[in-house]
Image (cartoon, rainbow, N blue to C red; front, side):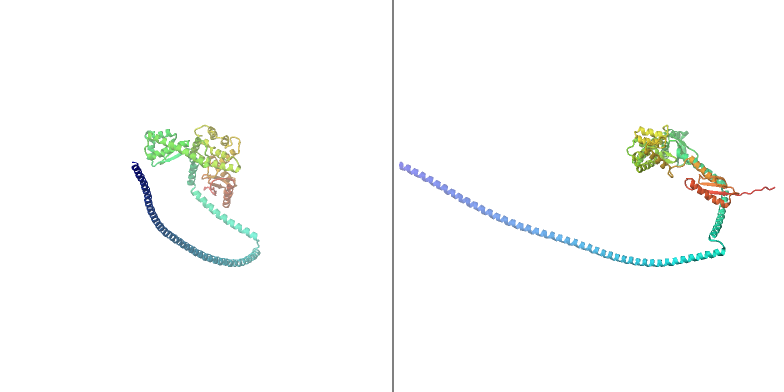
Length: 529
């Protein structure tokens, strides 16, 4: 039993040892196989890596080759462009060189021409000097010959040089007086033939210029008509149309025998303008009845209001006043339709403002006050038909109402000298007002000044000895003087006309020219018995 146990133990031990050995051998074998497989994979990876490196090298080589080709092509392109640009530059430089050569040739030719001209001028100058010397010598010879001749003439005639000159002047004067007398006689004959006709024309012209023109400028506006039939349509049945126009506009329509014309009469220029626009619209439209008249007058009123506001704003812009009260701007615009002695009041206000500003600048005064006072000085004239008082007082009230400064109010108040001056700006406004209103062509002269000028013309003519009567005619553009034939000869009449003209020039101021006609007429009568 014991031996069997021992044998069994020995067999078990041998089996364990064998298993261990087998396990060890299996492990060793697995390690060897693993190494073999790993080595194989490593070899394969190495082979793949070598292959990848070779492919990468080949690809890099290909890219390098392509890059070098592209670089060469780009370099060639840049080289070609540089060559082309260099060629163009060489061409431009060559052209510039050619132009410079041409300019040098031109300058050389000009220099040569100038030198030739200078030489010619120098030669001409030398010739002129020689001619001058010869002429001087000849002049001296002529003077000597003249003196010798005068001396010889004085010996022969027995008269001095002065006596001979006086005699010549006397002969020429008598001849001129004779010619002048003949001319005066011819003028007298023409005047006598046309006296009656000329007198009628003079009287009619004087009436038109002295009365109608000034009055129409102040209160009348004429509207042309396409035909005389339009007059009847404007009057309407039993006068209803013309009454509608007059009642809505506040003017008087004068329909007389004047062909194709209707006259609008009103003291208010704004009403006249509204009536004028309304009539023109009605004439163009052709529909003339009370309802249409009311509609058209309303539109014309709005147009005039808009034009008035725009005129005031434009005037403010022209003089550089931008902070004026809107109501004052609108009132100033109404001066567009107002005139004084034929001068537009808005234009006069703009002129006065600009002149006042210039004077204030030169004198060191307040330019803004002077310009503002000059612009507003006549604002009262826009409302003097509607408000009681003078335009000065109305203007002062308006300036106070719309918060103008006391300095500007004083300029308005003092521009006609009604109150003592308290500032230099007020004096400047008065001076600017006078300059604008009295400059040549600004205003038409008043009837009183016109009469005074005619009287002064006749007084100057009557002050000369031998004048029997004198008449200022043709609106003061001609003076006819009748002299006493027993005191004034024909020759004296000519010189009297010159003397009167000279005195009028020295003593009077007048527009245009004044013609002086001296008339001498001899009459002889007898009675047959």
